[in-house]
Image 1 (cartoon, rainbow, N blue to C red):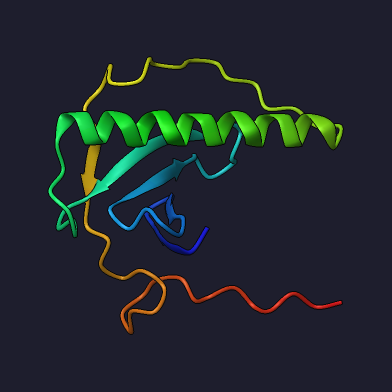
Image 2 (cartoon, one colour):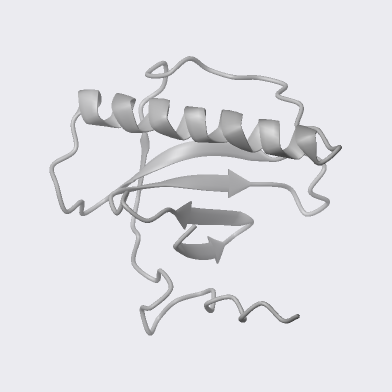
Length: 115
């Protein structure tokens, strides 16, 4: 993931190549469960549409499936309690201001990996 911000128990991450979309991760303080949903930029570089939102949601769902496989191969697991079909819910719009690289960012760039 390229950029992130954290506010009020929510973390939004974006990946390179998808500047207008991200994934919001939300959890209670004990992190017993995690909610994941696609979000779209309030001020996108390219106009958003229902079709574009649906295509991005399908791509992110595919990526999540790959994450599940990787976690399983490492001996872990991800249990999905409830899932909605692609396009079943409107993509939430969020302001991406404050992303890493912005001087007002809420989350600093992760430290370099130490060996």
